[in-house]
Image 1 (cartoon, helix red, strand yellow):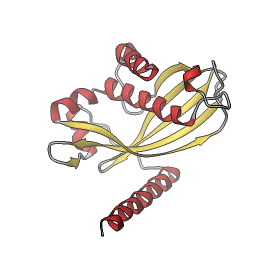
Image 2 (cartoon, helix red, strand yellow):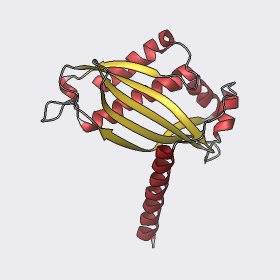
Image 3 (cartoon, helix red, strand yellow):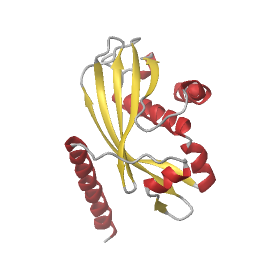
Image 4 (cartoon, one colour):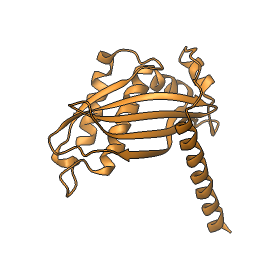
Length: 186
């Protein structure tokens, strides 16, 4: 239930945070609740993914993507992620999820989520890759087409060395997964 309450809060308050433009940071504040912790009394690993979802949903709402997706039969899909835990988020501690769209290429969008403690220290960093899927035509949509639908003209920046390594690792693991599916079929 708490997930739905957090989602409702994001949906009810996104307009107060203003329009999201590429290069902006989305910031959502949370507190680590008893329903978020594991036996070590800190934020459960799975909660990081759920809270990053909240950050992405905030960006989707504020950028106009949700409206454009509904009009066009599209939906945002997460393709993969990598997370590095730097320090723990203890029970009752406040923190922010700082979400950004880093860059894009073709149909692939790279995002980043930083989990920042009240004192400004980073607790975790997550990189994500995803895309916008056209459910009617069964294809991923080129980001330039998405940008046009949003009335945007921003161009992507070149990916950093770290982002290139993440994308290469993601694509290799995705290929491995596809091969495993094919092996099971034969």
